[in-house]
Image (spheres, rainbow, N blue to C red):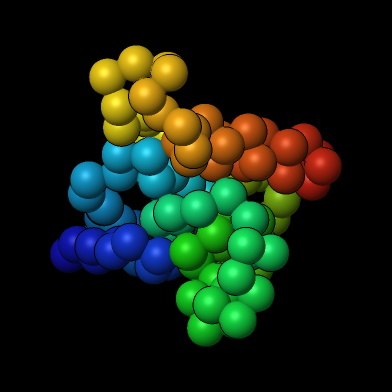
Length: 125
């Protein structure tokens, strides 16, 4: 069975035979957390770096932002029995959507990845 994670969405599973996938990341990030001991995991497809950009939107769509989306993903896998010491975190995406660095004015992909790295470091990963 497959679970497809849309943009600003999150899916988790405790079913070993289930596959969690996403498409078309671009500047977005697909962040996964997997505990091979508990055999639970999940994925979030985040779009923007920080929820403070639109706190009201973040309340209804926490998976839209790296900071709130990562927290949501971790809470969900912990609720399924994952333990921090066993977690394997992976990430894909974060690309520049322009031909060159000068044209990528907002640098969303780079900012997404930078925020994620800082949050993982602060959380001891």
